[in-house]
Length: 347
Image 1 (cartoon, rainbow, N blue to C red):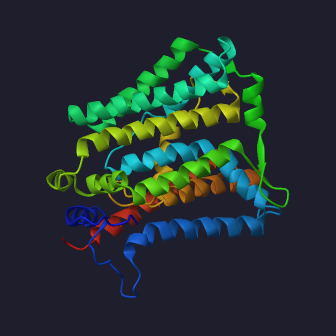
Image 2: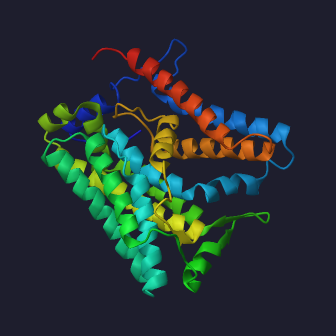
């Protein structure tokens, strides 16, 4: 978990947000705060073993790396969602921001002949600003994050169709080259550029969440916002920065989505915000905020990817079975979270 600051006040808030200073353990000595994450990792391993037993070639390095390649954009947007949920909020606009990013990128590069190196910083700034605006509305006017980000979802999706109602294909050579780039790993296996970027984002996010004042404040806000205010932590600015970070991750995910699809379309990433929330929850982050792990989100994304891969290897099941299985898993982890919070000791 996060490093404990030297200041007594901050240490008190960190303890309030993430649990008491003395670990809460079961009778066998297991710290229950690791229960959701342990369940996620165990489930992922069980699915991998099941796939290797049922299907030839399932348990190979390239198949595993393909999970990262195919879900790189989901991993990035889920990292941003993790910070939002840790703070006790929610962001429903991320899928629409991804679609808007693809539309703006495709329009600038393909129709207006911008360099990709000029369009990418612009769309990243646009996504960050969009998220920051939502954060300001939530913090300044004390509006519910659900309502504000729902409005942002409709706004961003509507802006897509002001650009074009049709899909815009990207044939620009630099973009195509970035899309097809492969980074060798070992034994003939390779990763795409998007997958490498996703892993870097996860690594940076783990450091930010657990080893910086910003990350500790996010945990404190999710654990007890009123207590964080009383302790003098920068609650207002942190909330704005959390949604700005989510907007940035959504825009970066949109860039990776254009690498993956080589197109911009207003219907891209429909429902992806729900997949991101599912990945975060399955990864062990409590919906009530204050407890969770960024690394767990990566395992949540991989679990969703393994489920999809198992169904595609089977060949006889409809792709809608992925939604059914994810729904069952989400319900299971919500019940697990309920057990976790209901058995928490009184402070």
